[in-house]
Image 1 (tube, rainbow, N blue to C red):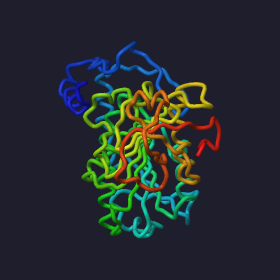
Image 2: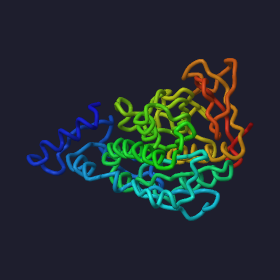
Image 3: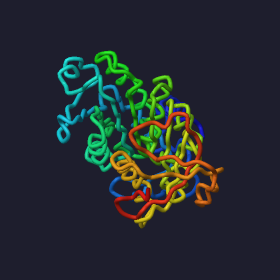
Image 4: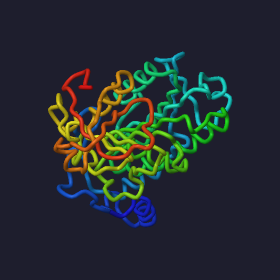
Length: 333
């Protein structure tokens, strides 16, 4: 698939001569209209990229339209918004440079009140005394999927600039960061890490989106951070199947999560696994020799590893399988 950066430039160059609905590419095989996962359930989406999509993406300016919400144990429920490059607001906030800093990056059509943000903010603050910064890029993520996809990259580049500014003003150390993203956000965290030189110590990608990303040059990859971990819960449909991190977990084989009646639920179930891993631990994965074993649960290689959690498992690599319960608590140990 041609990279979206190239497509964007081409779309802008010829936009004056083309109708707004001119088809630029057909990046996903199959019918033009297919169901995609949203926080409100599956939605029928036009899977062909049009000139209007690229023009809409070009109007997104994450440096001014992204919002950043700080949560700490002193303000668990009501956030402190910290605008980019507003040094005075940052210095007056509850941000503590001596604490660990966690960035949360949501997926397509999410808002600050979506499950990803609500559950992970609460879970991390219960687990550790940290700075949690929710990245609200809903201006870029709220439109059609093929608008949100290129916005994923530009937003990630902007978040990296935000983190650089944050550290410069406060003296915070990048070595004490954990960045977590889901779906489109699962790729955006890779863009963030890549633009920070691969120096973030812990990056977690929760079921990174598959449509449009199989050959995308900015897709999440192992080298985006010092330790990168991927959780696959809807592999092969809404989420990627192939390994992408230092460590890839395939709970229940990576698809069709227990307690879920559809793949939309499976795609979002990793959010709840991650939240539980922060506060309760558990989720012990068994090492697999290859992807087929991870998908079938036929894993007998030596070694186990805990999925998720607050600490990076730096130096570990490989594929791991585990089984979960259908309802909370999800971990079987």
